[in-house]
Amino acid sequence: MKVDILAFGAHPDDVELGAGATIAKEVANGKTVVIVDLTKGELGTRGTEHTRKAEAEDAKNILGVAARENLDFADGFFTNDKQHQLEVIKMIRKYQPEIVLCNAIDDRHIDHGKASKLVSDACFLSGLLKIETEIEGKPQEKWRPKQVYHYIQWKHIEPDFVVDVSDFIDIKMKSVLAYKTQFYNPDSNEPQTPISSKNFTDSIIYRARDLGRLINSEYAEGFTVERFAAVNSLFDLK
Image (cartoon, rainbow, N blue to C red; front, side):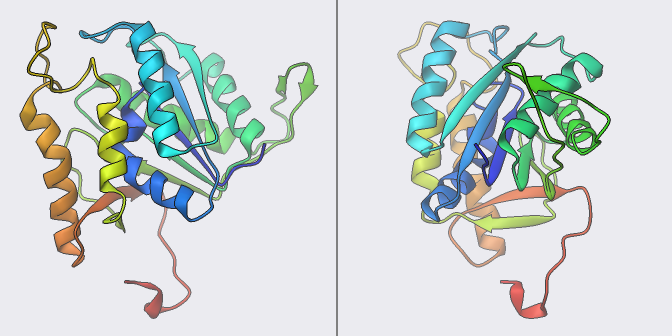
C-alpha cells in the first residue's frame, strides 16, 4: 500500500499528541495516512502494554488512518543501530510515503530524540539501492520520502512551520483521550505522572491555541524541518 504520510512515534500516543489534528485534517482532505509505533510503551507507569494496544486502536479509528503497526522495539532501550534501522526501512519501503512525520528532535523523554534520529537516518538509508530488505519473502524496492517533518512534544521548540488545524482540534483531543490510562482522570487510582495531570491535558489546547494566535487562526500544530522549506511563490504563504 502506497500512502501519502507515514507517521512514526516512539510510543503509542506520541503521534496523536504531536500531530493528531494535522493527520485528521489530511485524512479529511483525502490523504492516506499510516501510523507506526516503535514500542508498545511497556515501561509506562500507568496502564499496561495490553491496555495501550487497545487504546492505540481506538485512537487510530478516531483519526481515520488506514493502518497502524507496532515494531515491538524495547521501550527505553532501543538504539539507532543497523538492526533497528532495517526494521524502520522495511516500513518506509512497504508504504512508500511522500512525507514522514516523526518525534521531536530533542525532548524530555530520551526515546523521543532517539526515535527522531533513528527514523530520520532510516529515511535516508531507505533510498540506497544496495541496502536489501524484504517483507513476507518478497524483496522491496528502494524508497526515500520527499520530506521528513518532526512534530513538537514536551519541550518548547520553535516550529519552522505551522499547520492551521482549527477545525480538527476536537478530533485530536478525542484521539489523545482515547488513551484513558495515560491522561488526566480524577477517578483513577494509578500513580500520578507528568502527563496525567490536568495541567498537561490543558496544555495541549493552550499550546495549539497560542500557535494559532500567531497565524491569526484558532488552533495550529507546529513542525520542524531538516532542510529549507520551499515555496513556488510568495503567495503560497498564508
